[in-house]
Image (cartoon, rainbow, N blue to C red; front, side):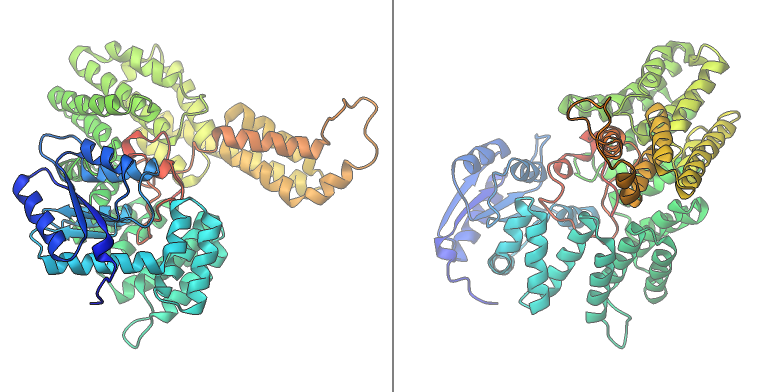
Length: 584
């Protein structure tokens, strides 16, 4: 191991609540040559110190007794508020290397994870490696931390092409950034190069690179090739949990829910400590009507820890719904209490507000009958046309309405609600089937939702015919009118796509001198349509970018989490987000 010749100049902060462990840790840091060591016993004290002073090294315990916050919360807050220099090495200390701790470490882009007990030699090795990597990749990491995606991409590609130290790491960073900036074709080529670079007589390439290629192909819309790529990885490595996880997601997109659930089940068995996979399997089983399987995996996720950055509050509502089905008012009340406490920690979260509202309705229905839940149900139903309402809210509303039909004044009122949800959110076959499942596959909800999907498809096909027939402006106007009425993102995005594809024709058609009736400064129609479409997409575009509980986190299997990219939203706790970014 190379000696860190500047370690004696470094300033370290050790954050540890246990006095004995704090003394041991400080002694170890001094023994390996750290020049100045300060300590903090509480997270809030550490935050104040990091606000006022600069430290080169932070060694922080993850868990603190009698504190709701964790070392992970401190790191998230420091990153979110830009209080941590890109050059600072952050090492997290845990009591055991459980699977979800390892995943958390990768998600947080930790410099190292230390598992107790560890020796001074192990500490020195991890610290030296991290500091060396920081020095070598300083330009790339600074750009990432500053959210300068393009600059980070250029710098990472340069190091990759020059085969400089850590060139494979830089290639992976660059490929992930290409996905972030929606250049999936280039990402496919780079992931394929990385896979080839790691190929040997024993394998056809690095599994993570081949899975990256599959994710990039999926982002490019080539779902068939993405599926074949993942299956090829599984031919080589049947025990690759990331491959099973990714294949599950692809199968959901293809509406093959039985097979998707089987691959999620395998992934959870291979990695029983992975909180994310427990949640994904449980959520899909919930929609698929496999209540016992769903409850087992969702409650296992809960037992792995609500404090984890990977925990999704939707898990609590799904548990509440399943316990409601068992008429277990106590368990529903417990889930409601947990959701309320989360909402108290994040009072501005619309998402948590909706989850609490649903749980309150379930609890009231068990205590006093479905009619008592009419208030919360009506409040949720009244949000369907809000710009901020999303697919998760729609699925949970349908699931709630299915369980509490007595909360509606009449069957017609229920049918109108299903119609409004379907016209807005039935943007694809897979999402329509998830909505059908959320509604319990009941009559008349199934027929209404399928009818809405058919209506949206017919509108899209008629618009395409108009455009191909030489009337793209008419097609766009029709799509935007329907999109404004229904807020259906498929129609809105199709209008934007047509405007881009037929830009030259639309521009020429609008050529010539301005009309005598035109107002000063009035835009030509094709530009006005483009602005109208962009504004509409910005208002409601977040609403349909995940399948609630299954594809909601943006954490794609096998992907590298890049801090600084997508901030500040990516740094928000999962339970507090109002919506989620599109998965890799």
